[in-house]
Amino acid sequence: MELSGVTRFVFALSYAAGPLIVVLLTLPVILLIGRLAVGEAGWRRAMNAIPFIGPAYHWSGIAELTRMIALFLRCDMTLDQSMDLSAVGVSDAYVGELAMGMSKRLERGEQLFEVMNSTPGIPKLLPAIVGASSVSNDIQSAMIGAADLLDGLAAFRISLLRIVVPMFSFLFVFVFVIFIVTGVFAPMIQIINFLL
Image 1 (tube, rainbow, N blue to C red):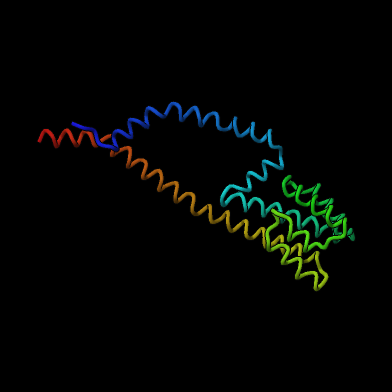
Image 2: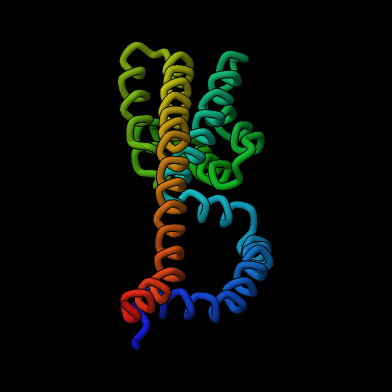
């Protein structure tokens, strides 16, 4: 009597469990070494590449930056000074690097819209909002509005994940348990059928 494919897979999975556990235990160490190797800004840049979570995380950092810029503009600082201080104060190191580069370009006399539009890593809606605000000459309000919009987009994406991830996790566990139960009981069913 030949074992079913599901049962053979369950046996193979039980043999692979040891090496799989070793890989899962060493993964945090590998991630820690990678984080130390690439630095804070490189780590944040890598985290931004994670689907669904990364963009929301990045948008939150950009929203924090735009709020800081608006705060410094309210204190009657120039735009390049506001960008420079915000680059130092923002908690996301990658966003801080982007802001520092934009600050240097603003010091050379480039327009904020052009700087943001040509900086990779800046969401494309931000230059559009800043460009529209240059007509009314109210960059401070535009920055606060952009921050609110980015925070709203990030919150929406995170709330969507809170709905979808548990559902797919339950579905995955359910299918996995059915698969394991089928693999374990299939030989017994085959034996009973063979004896009848």
